[in-house]
Length: 183
Image (cartoon, rainbow, N blue to C red; front, side, top):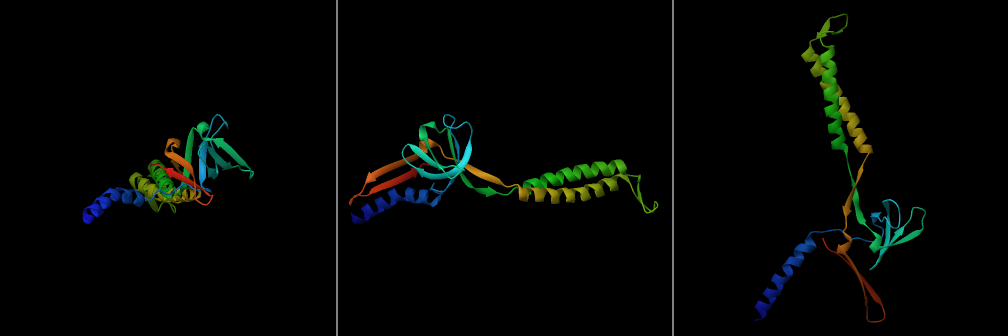
């Protein structure tokens, strides 16, 4: 009988282990958040979370003050999950643009492209290929540089109906604050 109870409890706890293994990062004070609350402010803004309780978000303002927003007035609540690089995207755009422009310019200047007193001349196909390779490389370098400079922040929306906060009294006079997030 003892083995059956142990096996049954193991089977019941297995789905909880799977949920814990998903590793969803918790929302903690200090998290970078993006809030849309039309009834409180006229636009969406990015700030730092100071605290979250059952009905209020406490946020840090850009001037070091604090702003309390009722959860009922928040239309959209997003959490930053870091920044992502745009190097590959911009390098690809630069490559395609450079190849296109280079081949077009090379094709229009072919047969008229002679260097060194007309000892070295290119036909239209050759000039288009050389122009595409040259400007394609240059476009890739410029695009990758722009992508490295311009990074994009990744935002994850946290539906407010999935956020639950509770307070419960503890023995010895303390209070326990618990927050849960349903994903």
